[in-house]
Length: 422
Image (cartoon, rainbow, N blue to C red):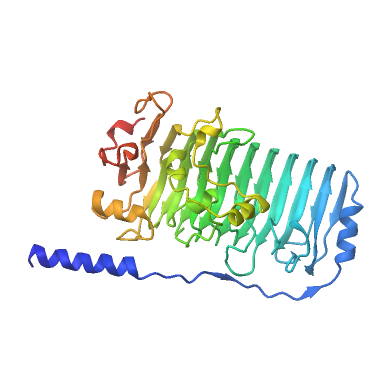
């Protein structure tokens, strides 16, 4: 067989992959039989006292308004199981969140489901000592940009545990923790979201024994400008992150709208991250990326005033075209350790739904990378100096790419020797 014949076969295969798109989006459609006890449920939340338990009965309950708790201590909200107690906000007319908790201490939420809030299903802010256990957050029907942004959403909080939960259908992040400290995210399941699990601008975070699949991206560890604190000291281990190839359905202009489909893990501008003993497989763009904020801000597109207003109303972090608006922000990752992970891929060709597919074709012989590092450094910085250290070890046979993105990929390389350590 001639080389010319092989070349044209390859061109045809690539064209078929590129032009054949599966735009079918998944559907989450559980059976529901609603009971109207809204007045009773609202009264329980309004009259809740410190050191008490709100017992939610079994059944599927339709609510037209948010359920709110503010300034409480030692309060438990308990259902009869995430399959037994379902709070649905389908057609919500008052408030944005399903359940909103603020300015509280020692709060436990367990054993119920929250569905179809106009905004976020469960938002907790400014709270110390929070346990979210066996909670399912979901939007029903076909996943859509109209779904709420965040499923399980603690922010500006300390001493947080999220365990045994499920998140389905979020148009931003299913399980999200933001601007928080001392966080454990364990034994959860996330699917049909744009981002399955996300740690944003949070410190001292442990993410382990989770399962994240069929999202646009499985796990995001982000540090973004313009917020109250910066992320560091993150450990993610013993997670299963696979088949995250869902078309991105985030609001245009949001930070996650720049996340390409088919990415397992993205570590963006965060410091002191250890990623070990994870199984990361079957992603059409790449399994793991270590990138600077510059890579995302380059994806910034002009958006309409209406679109900007939508981002503000939905409380979604936008892409800023210039991270320098925050003089204390460092947009470059550093002290990243990637070790003892298992990488694999059942896909023979990359997706061409984003520019990375073309890059892998031109620079990486059509191989989908397991680990990619953009190599963008601070002005005056040097590769592998103390501020930009990347450490790879014991990950088995992997396809590694150093992008040299700051120099238009001129120094693109598969040599991981400079980044290999013990």
